[in-house]
Length: 219
Image (spheres, rainbow, N blue to C red):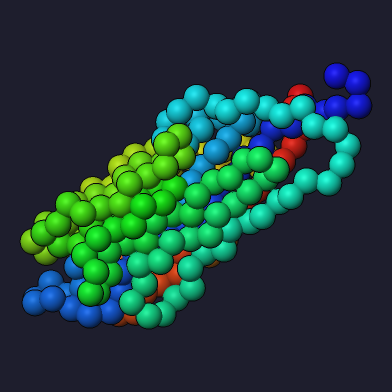
């Protein structure tokens, strides 16, 4: 259309962080991992949008000013279990990843992808439709992993993310964090990948990754 440009976008929210602090018996902390940030894509070279759904439609936009908000990850420290920040481009909003079940609260939070449950629980958080999957259940010694943009969380392990070529090379976004008591714990996540943070065995909560917004002209 005259005076308009066709725009493709990738909008990824920040990841939630997992539960931290507090121990339970011999297994250490058994809290849930954080969910990956909500994922929405209309990039033609990508295979899927969030939750393995079809790519979203491109936008025809006139010259002007449009709102862009990049969701911030959750900082390290405390008992964790907080949701990541939403990311927005114009009318497109991706929901921050859900916080994992934390000390004193056995329920994972809903989000772009849901947070994982604590040990011996299936109270994981739900994902947002066409953005991400639910978190995982815990067993007797391990919390559930957070959901990701391409898969549900499971005991110990976070859900898989999705790869996008929006930046010009393949980058994986919106992975879920691992459950407490497992092998993927206590490392903070930096950068703009929307990754959920793992539950930290025996320590304070660790940081989740920020989101990202990439906008480009359609070829």
